[in-house]
Image 1 (cartoon, rainbow, N blue to C red):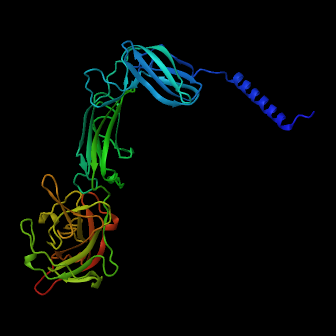
Image 2 (cartoon, rainbow, N blue to C red):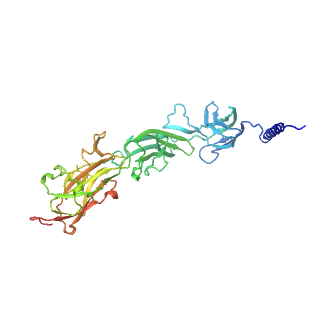
Length: 466
């Protein structure tokens, strides 16, 4: 009698299953969750002298599990080295130098948060625990370990200050930088960084002066958001400043505080090229004594010249003693406000005056328009604010100082005049031009020698050249 095919197929599959099961039992017998666990040394002296500083814990698990490794002293105090860490079935080795998760001793006061710390000298029972992920089985293996000569002081952070706590990295000369002072109680590797709301870390450079890197004492971190190297600073907002110190034994102490960035950004501005007419308008007009300005007297401001589009770009011939009047437009095309300072647009200079002679001293970080001629005794001796109260935003600092800003995306018309009184035959005619000056920072190539115009001085009846 012929056996039906389906019965033959079932029998074959059953036989194959039996063979597979038997094979698995022979190759991989029913192993315990923790196959083995041991320490390479019975005693360690974690003092960074290179002798018995570290013991190797080796263990093997037969199934995926959550693994913990703790040490318990003779008083029942438990110190955590690893806790509930996911491990797949495999063999592992981890070095233990006596450093465990941070802890505090009774009545102890520490400068900062202790993240990792040496355990005290003494006899310990170590325990490796595994919790199987598939069925929750728990298994432990224990052993003995002695720790000696482990009494090393923590790398405490005994000073931690950030000032100013709110800073504006935009190169305006006002609160452009913040300084972090970190005092180390002992030599230690020190990292200082910002953490944003998403947990991203932003490196803060150490100031390369004073203490050596990692040396005990005060370490200084000077931060300007990267603006000074042409980068944009981190976005405005509040950040956590982290100072983390780690010594040779692996102990870690950390301290944190808050820092706010406001009005940050690499400042960028330019003298705007005009679609028609000259970028820098130059015209002449007669001088009047009412324009005379000095450090003690503010003369009348000259009126804004007519529309730039209707004026010529030809060379100018003007009588000695008349006014060379200019007009131009400045645009702030950066995300940061740019600060400016006087004198106001429309101010008239004598040719032998400079900005300081009208009580307009150089101000670090301020932007001003300057005019320079080939006979000028210094770069851009005549300078003006990049706007007036109608075009600028006024801000009052906590100390009462008042500052003026051209806001991002805004434009402002600037004008002024110089009374041309010095005719130097060897340089007549001469060229005069405009520049946009970021004082004590730079005059960019795009903002220097803008709109040069040939100017010739001539004497009139009754006048004589020098």
